[in-house]
Image (tube, rainbow, N blue to C red):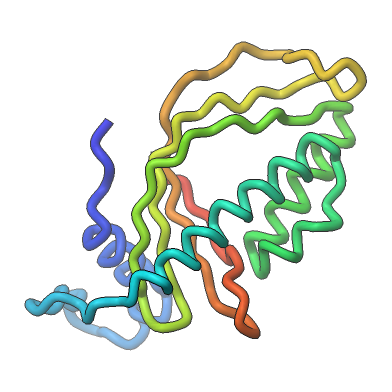
Length: 165
């Protein structure tokens, strides 16, 4: 499955912004003709590490049904979403075994905001909470997510998650 262009995603995110729509009465602005300034590799490495850590925290939360560590990797709407997922699973007596393979790209929106686009090889399955046995087959599919990370007090946190498939 082809991965979406980061430039296209950035244009999409900007075009979908309520603030951008309110400020621009005419047609949506076009992308600048020049390339964005280069970002030091260590910054994108830190964003990628934070993104992967968020997945580890999420995997632990949905298998143990314990949201306590979620605020160490998530904030804002993404934290609300993840807490709700854990609560819904607990109510149903289910958990999720997270197994994914990441194929990601990192784009810096500004010095404190990054967009990670990930075409995940998805092997997540719901499992019975007591036995740990799968209650559904492995989907063995690809899902595409756009995830916004923001730096808050020196820590990169996932703040928004959007499905692109």
